[in-house]
Image 1 (spheres, rainbow, N blue to C red):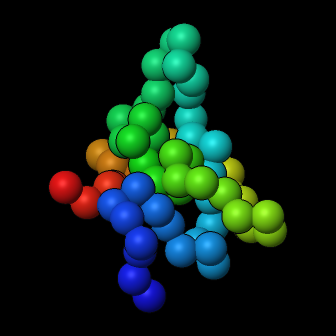
Image 2 (image 1 turned 180 degrees about the vertical axis):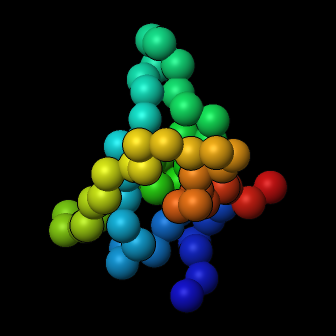
Image 3 (image 1 turned 120 degrees about the vertical axis):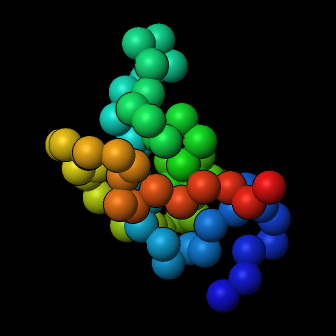
Length: 65
């Protein structure tokens, strides 16, 4: 599977709302994670972010540079 742009994610990849918000701040990585920021197709799956992360979230997908 290839992405059309650096800010897209395949339609079959689960999405996440992240942990945090724009006001109080995001957990490390959530602010730019493609699972949170990429456009969502009409039908998609979601998951809940892990309650505890030691370093980076294991589900983090960073945009390519």
